[in-house]
Image 1: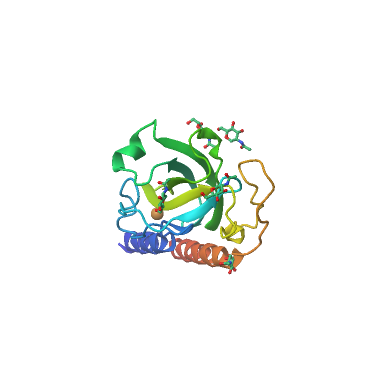
Image 2 (image 1 turned 90 degrees about the horizontal axis):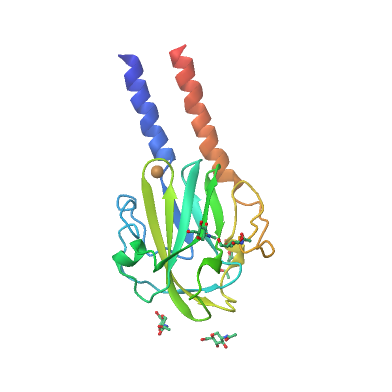
Length: 203
Ligand SMILES: *[C@@H]1O[C@H](CO)[C@@H](O)[C@H](O)[C@H]1NC(C)=O
Ligand SMILES: *[C@@H]1O[C@H](CO)[C@@H](O)[C@H](O)[C@H]1NC(C)=O
Ligand SMILES: *[C@@H]1O[C@H](CO)[C@@H](O)[C@H](O)[C@H]1NC(C)=O
Ligand SMILES: *[C@@H]1O[C@H](CO)[C@@H](O)[C@H](O)[C@H]1NC(C)=O
Ligand SMILES: *[C@@H]1O[C@H](CO)[C@@H](O)[C@H](O)[C@H]1NC(C)=O
Ligand SMILES: [Cu+2]
């Protein structure tokens, strides 16, 4: 009787630790963890204030509660894309994809070369699709792509494992930041603690 209870406790704590993901930069349209599985934008279907994003060295910065995940970043180059646009091949352009094996801050570089229509002044919505193993999760941000975006904060491009943030466009790294290590240590040490407790009790 003891073991199933402990397992449930363990699973419950794990779920709190791995709290899905957030889109931190450019600012998300909105975040509601319960709606995050809602296609196409995690329950937020209204265009918000646009961030000017450069055509080169563009990225989105996320915060992951999962240690291991895959992601895809898409762009719909319209002023106010409809839900259907996010599932229409001719409207949806994939600009990034990959996997990560560490939690917390991650800088996902965008490579716009798949799009022929995005130029200086193009309004668009960026969609981040996150798969941490518990279902697809969605976040969006509204942007205007520009040649020169002096307000776009390149310092927001940070990987929590300290790895280089080489842009997918092949241009020079935006930042090689070592910040954000502390939170990932917190997550992994609490995880380790529960593993130790469970092993201890089982034995
Ligand atoms: C461009 O599109 C192709 C086909 O969908 C895809 O395989 C590739 O990963 C895309 N490139 C980027 C940078 O996302
Ligand atoms: C890009 O667009 C902005 C604003 O629309 C304009 O001021 C700028 O001159 C354009 N840049 C180029 C290289 O066309
Ligand atoms: C882009 O969006 C801005 C603000 O949302 C708007 O003022 C502007 O007219 C749009 N540009 C185009 C080319 O539609
Ligand atoms: C840019 O981002 C960095 C890192 O988060 C932050 O410290 C800095 O204040 C930001 N700069 C601006 C102008 O917002
Ligand atoms: C950018 O994406 C295009 C299309 O998927 C690909 O051919 C190119 O190699 C990519 N560039 C880099 C630096 O990854
Ligand atoms: Cu999750």
